[in-house]
Image 1 (cartoon, rainbow, N blue to C red):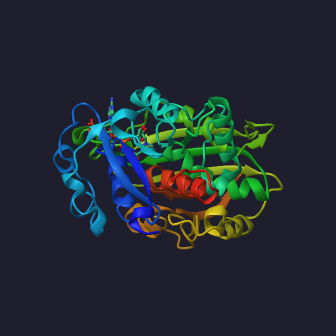
Image 2: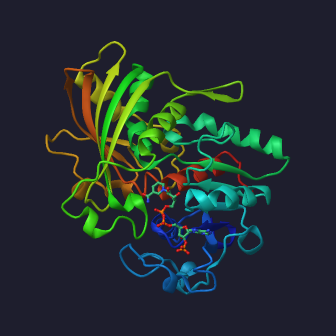
Length: 362
Ligand code: NAP
């Protein structure tokens, strides 16, 4: 697609951890182009480069900014309202408080909002989407459109910890059936946004509490692994216990997982099932789709965040140490990029799937 034909998009919360990753991805995206960058009242009217503390390598706006986007840092931030920032496609990196009012306002104005916030994730008519896992749930966007009589709607991606876990559980659920899961997370500081946890609190430390996380992971995972029946998602029937910890790691959530599967498959069968997993994004060759959604490591000391988190643009999750668990049958470790696969890259992939299905107006 030429630059004029690309679909104009707005980034809400463009100055934050996830917003910056949206900008960095969008400046080189083949299907979308940035029309508006929006943030809070604090930032409105200021140049993007001045209002945000750029966390990624290179110049503000992205190291590989192409010509049509050169000068992203000089753009003026606008208010997060449809009047100031309408585009047919909206990527939201808002906190869930402001998202509660702002996202429906854009949807009512006719935009399709791809959201990272938790505000509408459990709304029965909002798809909670990981395209490799539950692409069929995107049909709920039509339900929203029929109800509103408009072209807008909201599509959510899940919590970053639930995304990483679900990408590893989905192939196992399909092949064997997941019955019980125990998951202990070690979550990166970037998952808390900017400026996030203070250095005095996190350096040399582990914090065994992340607000609402241990509740979100089971309910979102069961919903994503659930089935769409008569226009509603029936959650998967599984028991999941999550213990979540913040650790002094920059990017990348690591999760130690024990799982009981139907038929008690061997570790070899489980590793093979994970390595073979592919989904609709791979079949359609969507621009943000990794070649392998789940990368299975055989080295006994992998995956490691410092070595593996950036592989595949941060869009694969990495599984290692698949072995017998004396309690639940199988255990392994899974690691993925919280701000890419768990946030900005995830929303982009959702929008790409919607576009490939003809659901986005140019
Ligand atoms: P963040 O770094 O704190 O950024 C928040 C953004 O929202 C900033 O751009 C901020 O703008 C803007 N904002 C705040 N209040 C606003 C308002 N009233 N109106 C308009 N804009 C407002 O947070 P984040 O880590 O990027 O997270 C963004 C969302 O993604 C959250 O819902 C979070 O739960 C979710 N998420 C984050 C991750 C992750 O790894 N970080 C992963 C998955 C999901 P100003 O700069 O002007 O204040």
